[in-house]
Length: 363
Ligand code: TYM
Image 1 (cartoon, rainbow, N blue to C red):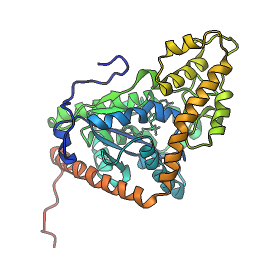
Image 2 (image 1 turned 30 degrees about the vertical axis):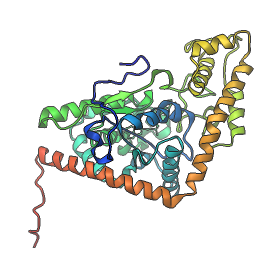
Image 3 (image 1 turned 90 degrees about the horizontal axis):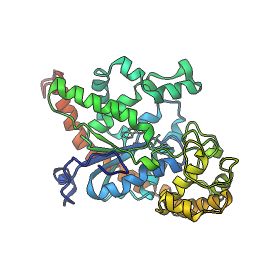
């Protein structure tokens, strides 16, 4: 177990394999998705999740994609959802996910996810689902009784996304930990009841960047749904907009640059972002800013974000224009994903006792 993550190193990992369809035999499998609920991914998505996905595609059989069915758990404009789904796929590739190495797919193109989700929802206690804090937070944020049943069962669909590929590792931010725990529970419950079927997946959460905070309210996390525009760095925004937001980030009335999440959450967040983007340990940064002020720290963060964000933005905006190419990547991804997903659903249907449709006997 590495100190930076809580991911297990227990799964098989015997180096790179040759042809992709066989990679599973020699490499552990990784899976993760993003929701297409904004025009742009934000810095939290990038540092907390996507940055981990990129190196993992070199020593894992990787499945990455866009969770468009999850996006429907809150109201979406249909045209915008389609656009955002393609934009999200483009951003995964811009972040470094290589369609030659990874299976990149769109959740709704693999209908087996919802088939498995039904089976898993029949194994999920109402009380257990009711304890999911993300549902409570989102429902409390204005939805109240209007929150959909889909939002409530969201973590069960997420469990299906993961279990259907028998993923060994799931790189996500800290906010997904509880959903991963439910996924692990459901895998173990199914295996116990029906015999070994699913891999119990390990969360891969990098402690230092698992929860990038909101710039305007550094006690909260940077979030598509909860942050005010001032608190969130959208990677596809004009660099000058993001520079302005960083320069206006909330800090504290003190003047000292040190890493203290409880007493100085704003400064700690800026140090975290700079450390992640520059690869310099936080302690080294703190030493280098001795005697300097918050303006210097913000300037360094703005430069680092502009550098990484600029290259990302250019690649992503270019790819977004390549619609046919993106659609072809998603079609190839769905084909490979369905090969695996359909076999797992057939096995699950059989194990739980569903009668298979008789072949060629319809009248
Ligand atoms: P989503 O789209 O909200 O976020 C995508 C990824 O970004 C991480 N993240 C953060 N990490 C650090 N700091 C932050 N402030 C921050 N905000 C978001 C999220 O943890 C996530 O990893 N339920 C998932 C999508 C999903 C999924 C899956 C993930 C659907 N099925 C199966 C893994 C496996 C979600 O809402 O991600």
